[in-house]
Image 1 (tube, helix red, strand yellow):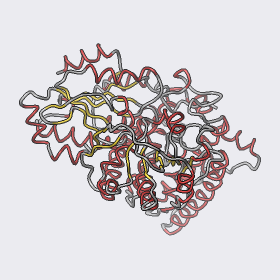
Image 2 (cartoon, one colour):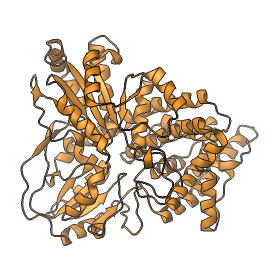
Image 3 (cartoon, one colour):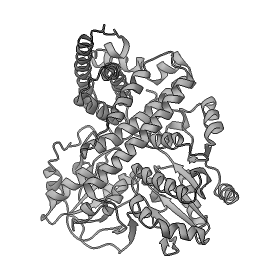
Image 4 (tube, helix red, strand yellow):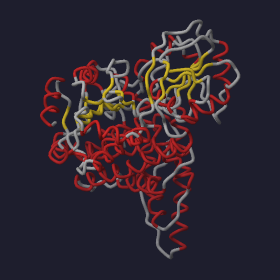
Length: 549
């Protein structure tokens, strides 16, 4: 195997025997092959779209296939093999659609080989050999590290877009532009002659579509559950049977809340589900009791300490431990061998496991965290914020957010927040928020100094607020007293970064480490064009921010 798609990749260069995330060589290779199969589907789907033909099932499959290969999602080889066979069925289906469209348009269909003609081997070892032949190492050897790295940057942006689009689709929101670009870009990745300029253009176009996806998911979430409002959340527990919901899927949480109503079971959020409490249509359930634990990488100890059932709804699954694997369940595209998987939103097995577990016997301390500062809330008090800036009460805004992870270097984000001047406001989102949640940061001009804007996909809220402030002050976003200090881990963060680059946002600080797939020549382009920089020391970065102010 060779995988360098996440920030914690081995020694900052790539995992070659076992993924730091826990995926095996077999799983990684099957994921590479599934991505190859998705490219083959896209070659036909892209051309069929050009003839005004599309297939909604194929669109949905592409979302799930890409989402499945995101870090910490699917570790189950059997599930992946099943998806590979489904991929060939989808490919044949969309090929027939394309051929018929050509016949109807009196055109001659193009003939394709490679990914478009791939057939899964019957033997498992041969299937793995097929995967190795199309993996990153093979493409790097054929194309060079710079081109392969740009391909991977685009690929990871597409994975992030697919993940967010899949969440929106679950809530009934879709966008043809998103599907069209996913197919276009995946098909383009099969072109061995694409140069760096072409691939850079596609990466920036991915950022453009990323903005569409983020807006789509924002509309899906607020359309289903209302505009988030400032809500204090119990960061602990109360007595009673309990279910813990981790991941990102608000729909799963909603249906679980409906199915547990009246059972006496309390439901708690974990990780990136914390912002769910700010949505009125979720907060209305009295048994949505609080939030237990912190970011995803602490789950092995936190899940073991939780005395109830656990549901993992999307990415961020780690290898289940004996202390809790008998009461752990997955849903959606998440999978781990021998862990029960919930289908059709029938959460009765989760409920039964919660009732069989001891639950909490006493209440925790009454610690609270305030969520709900999405763009709807912040823009509703824009006059107050703008007035505080003009009066000099607020000197600067700093976004500390993105993905969290296990490295010691991520303490930087906590230390940065603690060292900031008291007249600077901190915006946060994603599980990177857990580096600043719990700090005593006080208020400015009657506003909390820490504004929790939501999940990682709520980067759209930060964008909306930044553009609104720029309009109010009659300047560009880059001219605002605003610093973006981003922590990244996986592919959704890559999409958010590409979206910011598409918008022309400069001077982003990125860490803890820069992506392994961004080679020095590509990094030079990003630095020269967008002034991207790695995080440094807290003292040096604060000094630079003060100078900019």
